[in-house]
Length: 513
Image (cartoon, rainbow, N blue to C red; front, side):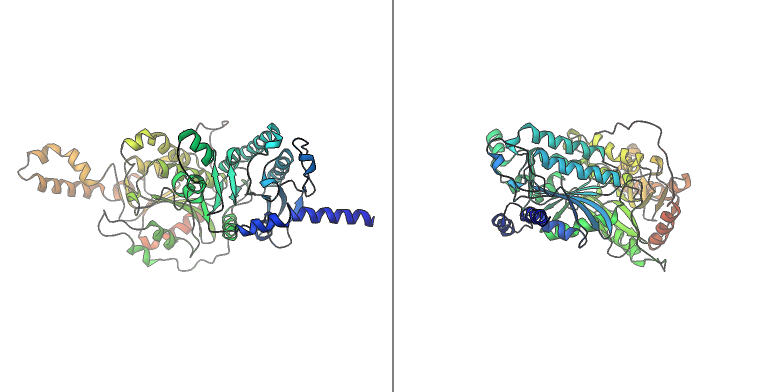
């Protein structure tokens, strides 16, 4: 018995060492934690239970039978984060470069299946050179098994991917299907084809960082939702993100204790500039309404004309979607529509109420937008809001023009409660543009066309550049003073807490992808 225990301990020690001390030292030299260290810092102390520690690969080709490492390049198991159950896999770059083999994939699939059965989030810490070439189609099949589960469990349990090293080729499609992707600056990259292939095919000279680094994917492609300065920052952001989301689609997000006090916020009345064309930062509105320092922005550096993220309102987790007047006047375009739609659908999947802050002058015009399918992409945001059954509250702070008014969670597409500040302007377009069209003949025949335009502009603004016409129609439920916003919204979401809304019976809708 002692011999068997001794053998077991020896195997466990080898598994913990991964590819060997030299490879661990090399990992540290690059400023990266090892796979086991990442799990250690992510999970509550002493909570990790490993599954499949002594698994080895089955390949006998190309001398692989002589190279056997326990865990086979991925550490899998379960534990808790802030006492909440999570399932995790961490690829170990010290073992065959973290490459995915048949058994490596089987371990990940087993963890994903367990996560779905137990209704808990699954977190992937990706650090892999890709498919294990020596195994051929078996490794490719392993990837497909993972992709299938990503899709099958999408909207059932939260799935989060942290890219903490290379992630290339077919490996990138698993993170792409998951709900959120975090990349570490300087040490991680994602691309379907690497710089060498790009050079061969297109003759472009590009580095791995420029092609698929954290900066490229957080600002240009929008593939990554969050970036971290190092592994520890990445783990901290993972924990914060988990604090806003429920365990699964049948639960509500965790709430923090909160005692209602004087919820009037005078600073909100000072944010909107007196000049309509003057920008302001919508984040000031968010911070004035939500619990102090609770806003956690998602996709911060991508499509900056719309702001999305999580925050707490009287302790409750809420999803924020807000036009950003500081960037492109808050106009909707291809990228902001996709960004907003993706976030709305996540919140709807996991029972997180939505607060929509509106200051939108319309959709961005131009050939670039039309040729890049602003019609289809704008429809994604429209579809996402229309389909959402979670509590949905809209607050119009200033402009709500044209079709963008409809799209930004208007009453007409199923919003539960629509509020407006007195500064709100709800119209087909701005007063100047509308007057130039409606009163074209009068302006043209006037002795002083410029003066006539100003007169007609004022006439149009008096009738439509306010929230009262829409309120009279019932499209706006109440016009409120800015300083009352937090109190009104706390009451609104409390009233909507037990909302039930059923969609017509169907297999699934055909979203304009």
